[in-house]
Amino acid sequence: MSLRMILRILGLLLMMFSLTMVPPILISLLFADGMWQAFVIALSITVATGALMYLPNRHARKELRTRDGFLIAALFWSVLGLFGSLPLMLTGASALSPTDAVFESFSGLTTTGATVITGIDLLPEAILYYRQQLQWLGGMGIVVLAVAILPTLGVGGMALYRTEIPGPLKDSKLTPRITETAKALWYIYATLTVTCMLAYMAAGMNWFDALGHSFSTVAIGGFSTHDASIGYFDSAVIELICAAFLLISAFSFSLHFVAWRERRLSHYFQDPEARFLMLFLAGLITITAVSLWLTSDYETTTGLRHAIFEVVSVATTAGFSVADFSTWPGALPFLLFVAAFVGGCSGSTGGGMKVIRIILILKQGMREVMRLIHPSAVITVKIGKVSVPDGIAQAVWGFFSAYVMLFFLMLVGVMATGVDQVTAWSTVGATLNNLGPALGEASAHYGDLPSLAKWILVLAMLLGRLEIFTVVVLFTPAFWRK
Image (tube, rainbow, N blue to C red; front, side):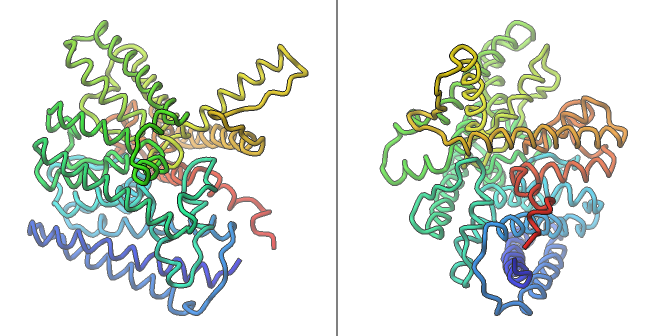
C-alpha cells in the first residue's frame, strides 16, 4: 500500500470535484441570488487542498491493488462529503451549522435524500441547484467518473471500479477496457438525465425545476426544489414520468447498455432480477391501493395514483412524495418502509440491500428446506439458468449478517442520544438504505435530531453507499498487515 499514491489520487479527485462548484456559481450569477461568493470560497479551499495533496506526490507511480481501492473509495467519499459541505456553511443567512451541513452533503452525495432543511422553497437558487447536483454526481459515483479519466493520468482504475459498483456480481465488465466501461455507464446516465429533464419540461415544469428533479430522479436521490416534493406540482403526468424514470434507474445499468447496443428490450423481462423487481412492485402497488380504498377517504383514481407513486418512490429508495405515507392507515407505513430494504437492482443507482441479494437469500432458504426433506440431495442455487458459486452465496449471507449487526449497533447508538424507538429504527433504516424519509419525529425532516445522532446517521449513509464491507474491511487488523 503506497501512501503517496493514495494522496496523489485523492488530490486529483478533490481538484476534479472543485470544478463541480462552477455550475452553482453560474446559477447564482444568473439568478442574482448573491451566493456566488460562497461557492468561489469553497472551490478555492477544495482545489488548494487537492493541490497540496497532489503536487508533492505527483511522480508517485504504482499499480493499484484491490486493498488500495477500498481505502481510496472510503477516504474519498468521506473527504468529498466534508468538502461538499463547505458551500452550505458559507451562505450567509441560509448557512447551516457544521453538523447539519455535513449531514446534508453526505445525504446528497450518497443519494439518501434525508434533509435537515425546512423552508426549501425559500432557499437561493444556487443552493437549490447545488443540492440536486450533489445527488446526480453521487448517483453513478464520482469514482466511476474518475475511473474514466485517471487512466489517462497514469492511474489504473479496476480496483476502484470494483469497490464502487454496488452488488455481489461486480467483477463483470460491460466492455473489455475498464475506462470504456465507465464511459459507457456515464453516457447512459447522462442520456437518461437529459431525457428525463425534457419529459418534465413537456409535462409543465420550468427548466430549473426540470433540471433539478431530473438530477435527483435518475440518481434515485429524492431531493427536491420544493418542500412539498413532487406533490408541489399536483400533476398526474409528472408523477407518472417520475415513477417511470425511477423504475428505469432502479434496473441494472448493464441492462440499459445491452438495450442501447443491441436495440432490444426483451432482455428486461428475461433478467431474473429485473423481473423480480417488477413483480415485487406490482404486488406492493396492489396491496397499497386496495388498503387505501378500504381504509381511507381516497377516491379510486386518487388512491391508485398515490399508491403507484409512493410504492415506486419508496421501494426504489428515492423518497419523493406526493402524500405523507407515514400517516396512512394500518400497516402501510411499515410495509412501504420495509420495502426499501430490498432497494434497486445490482448495478443501479438505487439503495437498499439490492434485489439480487434478496433473491439469493430466498433461494438459499428454500434450498435448506429441501435439504430437510432430501438430506442427501445436491441442490444448486440458480439465478435464471446460471448456477451461483457457493462463494457468492456465502458472501451474501456475510453481507446480511454484517448489515443486521451494524443496523442494531447504530439503532442502539441513536436511541442512546435520546431519540424514541420508532424514530431511531426508521432513521437508521432510511439512511443505511439511502432512502431518506423516515417515520416518527423525522417524518418531515431530520433537523430536530441530536447532533450525535446525525453523525451516526452520516456513518449509516456512508456504509449504505459503499455497501458496508468497503468500510468495515478498513477496521480489520488483516487489512493493515503487510
